[in-house]
Structures are given as structure tokens and as C-alpha cells.
Image (tube, rainbow, N blue to C red):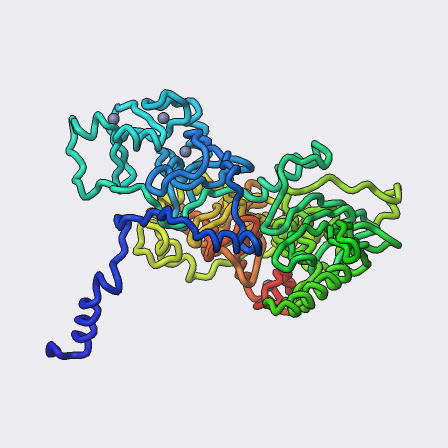
Length: 589
Ligand SMILES: [Zn+2]
Ligand SMILES: [Zn+2]
Ligand SMILES: [Zn+2]
Ligand SMILES: [Zn+2]
């Protein structure tokens, strides 16, 4: 026991003395300061206008984004319906309109699940307050039919509780049948200060924009814009162009068009639009960048064009001029050395990159290093065969058969102590409060929205994540016939004789799951030495199931893989590993 003058006591006393003066404990109930209506002094306003350094939205611009549920336009109050979240291309929903819908739940990472379900249910439900459709907030008292828009529920005096219960005005006061909720469970404000978003399928959104562009022949209603980049056209690559029209880090399709908003050469404090396009000249890519500039002689607006066979040529010239201008005016330096044409063309932007990597026959770009791989939803129609004769086109190498002829072997560490209801020592227990059996039931309902099948970057077909997956999520079950080892050996020989790929998975020393004939898509998951999933045996209602569980955060579009843990084999029977991981063991067995 320490005396009152111990070092610990002293610091504690010191911090307490400053409480409320130097620091405050923050809580959700702390009122938020409203922005004061103090006007900016006129001289500052004039200065901003003179230099054009601060971007101000013009006052006549009105936010026309409307919530799909309550139809009110623009962002709401933080403690009301709150900000608009993006739902789909040009579709928006208020954060609290989504969050308080009966069907919607929030994951630990802040993703709102089932928003689409709430929207489709709500489209036929009338609000008790405003009599319009789109009501999704239910009174939770049993048999009460009252349903509201979130904003209407707030207006007419519904009460919100911390456990996501809502009571309509009638049941807040009356509390007939059942004990009233204790007042400490009331939610005083609907304000949400954590990251919350609607789980969207971005690749699908991109695909719908792309397809729309094709339908209307360049007259697209939506422009794909990422920061200062506007993307106009993908262009195409015919097979004879593949060899020349790419570098290690970018693909250069002929017909590609984008606009880059970048510093102007006329006024160092302003930006202007640079139009980038890729064409063909002498069988090689031809890069063109055009922009408007004031000519030095007569102050006329003229169109300047930079072009060359090298993607950096035109932009290098622009960048060096900009760098000189800036150093003359003693502005922050620009270092052209670290900016390249590929990124200014937008070719390395992840969104554009995904689209380009889905171009037909893109595998023929031999030196290009793929970052995402083909995405089936983005696939575009084949480019016209330029030679008009199929035989002169280079033959696309067929992918080798997946070496599943060996039976995957689970190490004992994975199936020890994974019975459902165990103390949560296993991976997914840490992240979720749900029991494993309820997780399993949910996975059985939802796995189709977790994965899609596509051409693998490792080998043959592969399974990909179709949404962001949190660590410790049951992604999919490895389904098949459960058979004894002896039967498996016989079947394997038969399959090999029939020249079939064999998909088997060892459950334990006696039993094997054969997915060759009856299996689900989980059998297409490739091996990796640095996997993003693990295979675990889980007992569910006294049956053994093989579960593929994520072991880290997986981004939508990533290929799923786990360590096959094949038995070690002698030379001669070795299978090379193509996983491409930094720590790749070079052999799968
Ligand atoms: Zn709304
Ligand atoms: Zn309403
Ligand atoms: Zn009610
Ligand atoms: Zn490997």
C-alpha cells in the first residue's frame, strides 16, 4: 500500500485538478456546437475571390439527392435522419432511415446489412404519420401495426431505445401489457459518430455504368469520376496490339479517354482540364494530351496538344513547365520526377485498373503485372478480330488442370477443440458474439452473396469475395460426399482413369469429403502459401462440416485461398506452387 504522496497519487491529483478546464470527458450526449453565423470579414472574402484558392460551392446549387425511403432531399441533421449514404448509382439513403429499419443490422465494422431488403419491403408500406410509402421503422410492441419513416417517427414522438427498440407514441405512454423500459435505456439522440456505410458491390455499380455507356454510344448519363480524374471511355485492345500496348504497371487500350484536373499553366493558383487519349500510330500506342491555354502573344485562348509514343512524354513537358513556374513564384515545389504519365492518364487508378484488367484476352499482355484480375461482371464484348481470320490470332494458352489429385490434409491443430459451443479459443470466436451454430445457419443462408466464381490468377477457376469480408467470418462450406479413406482411394483411381479433376478433402484419419461430383463452389478455392482463409472442421448437430473461414479482412474482388497443407512428397511427385505469395514455398507438397 502506497502513501498518499506516491507518484501515482500525485499525477492523478494533477489530472483531476484540470478536469473541466483543460479536458473534458467526451460522451455522445455532449451537445454539438452549432456553426456560428459569424460572417467572414469582407476583406478576407475578397482575398479568397482574388486568389481563387478556396473552392466554394455556388449558392444556387441545391442538393437534389433524395432518400429512397423518406424522399426528403439532401443531408439531414446529425441527430435526425443524418447524412445521406450511397446505396447504388445515383441512389441515396439517410443513415438513420437505413439504421432504424427493422430488417437492417450493423456489423462490427459498421456495414449496414439488408438495406436493399428494407427498401423493397418499405416500398409497399404506408407511414402512419405522413401517409406516404417507404415506411420501415416499426413499433416493437407486439401486434402494434404502426410503421413510420424515421423522420416521421421522430416528429410524432416515437421513443428510441439503445437496443434498437422503437415504441410508437401510443405505447410509450400506455405501456399496456409488459413492463416499461427503464429510462436509462432511452436513446437521447440518434446521432451516430462511428463509421457506418451501406455494403455495396462496387464492381457491379461500375459494370452498370459501363453497360449504360455502351447502350447510349458514348452519350453517358453518368460519368465515372474519382477525385480529379474523369473517366470517359475504355477503348479496346485487339490481339495484335496486346504485345505493344502495355507496360509492367499499366494497360494502354486504343480509344481510351479520360480528363485530368490539374494545375493550370496560365495561373499557378488555378486548375484546368487536361484531356488524355490513347490512339495507335505505327503499330504502337500514341498518347495525346490536350488542354486550353492563353497564348503569350495576343492573350487568345488556344488549344495545346502534346503527344508521343511514350506515356510520360507529353506530361513530362507540362510538369516541367509547371515546376519552373512555381519555383519562379516561390510556391511549394513540384517534383515531376515522382509523378508519371500512367497515373495522370488515370490508368493506375484502382477503378480504371479493374475495368482494363477485364478487357477480352487481356492475359496476352505478357509483361503486365495484374493487380485485381478479371472481374466477370465487368467483362466487355470481344474486340473485333483485326485480321479477320481466327488462325492468325495467337492461341491463348489453356490453363492446366488444377492439381487436386492429392487429398488435402488437415493438420490436427485445426480440428482440435472446434466443437460448437467451445470456449472461444478459435479464430472466429474472438470477433463475434454469435454462437458458432447461429453463424453456421447464417452462412448457409448468405454464402451466395459472399462469393463468385471466376478465372483465377493462380490457376484455372477460383473463388472470389463478392463483398468485403471481416476476419473470422464463415465464408462458405466445403460440401461433398463423406466417405471412408478406402472408398476415396478407389474413387480417385476411377476419376483419374476418366481424366477428371479430383476434388477431395481429408476430414480426419478415417474420413474424406469427396467434392468431385456433388461438391459446391468451395472446391474451386485455390491453395496459397499466404492464405486469407483457413479450413476448419466444425461440429454442427453432431455432424462434421468443413468450413472456410476468413483469417483477415478480405476486400471485395479478392481471390479466396487457404493452405492445402498437402503431405510432403519426394522429388518426382512434387507439384509446383503458383500462388505468387512472397513467402511461397515453391512446392505444394
Ligand atoms: Zn430518409
Ligand atoms: Zn412518414
Ligand atoms: Zn405501437
Ligand atoms: Zn505458394
